[in-house]
Image (cartoon, rainbow, N blue to C red; front, side, top):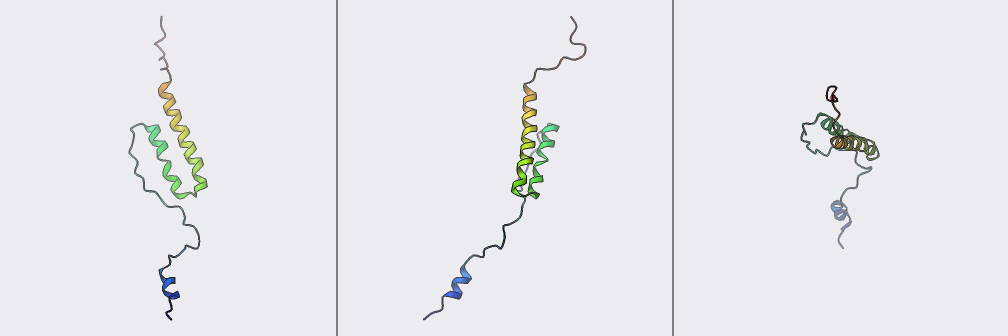
Length: 86
């Protein structure tokens, strides 16, 4: 009779006692050259230090800012102070 129980236990993967904490994803960001957009994107690494339920607030805020920046591109240009002369 062989004793396989100790060997089987040694081959079994260890299960962590609790879930792993937040860890940085290490995603590289390239500057866009637009200060407003770059400022918004610089907020994204903040989620590396938050739990998953804290990501939503940051992502929604950054998304709102990026959407506003895109919408501003479609806005008609505002005339300067001396461009309204007839």
